[in-house]
Picture 1 (tube, helix red, strand yellow):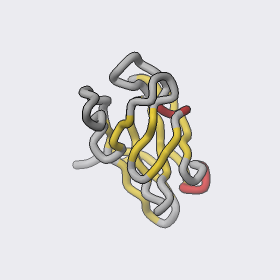
Picture 2 (cartoon, rainbow, N blue to C red; picture 1 turned 120 degrees about the horizontal axis):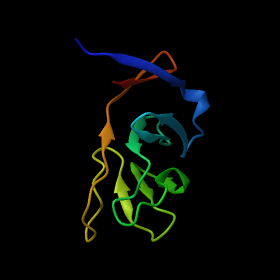
Picture 3 (cartoon, rainbow, N blue to C red; picture 1 turned 180 degrees about the vertical axis):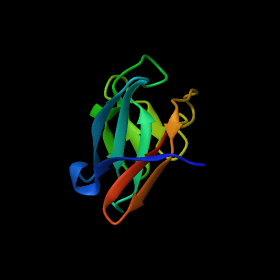
Picture 4 (cartoon, rainbow, N blue to C red; picture 1 turned 90 degrees about the horizontal axis):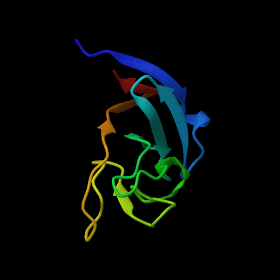
Length: 102
């Protein structure tokens, strides 16, 4: 059985921005796109560990604030020519509430 945990409301996450949630497994960055989709990634760029939550969101991508690597929010994968991945977590949006799959 899947265990979904309510973690925020959509309004808690700025449009084209992020919010950090602290967990025992580390910081999770929740990203909100212009079309109000929500994605969750570990808040560490695969390049040098920069805080992705402080990057700029455009489309379904976030740019790491340290060195400009672009990370796909849907997969956690670095956009070519860069190579690397950060862990993506499943999210669900229901009636303005954001849930994270535990």
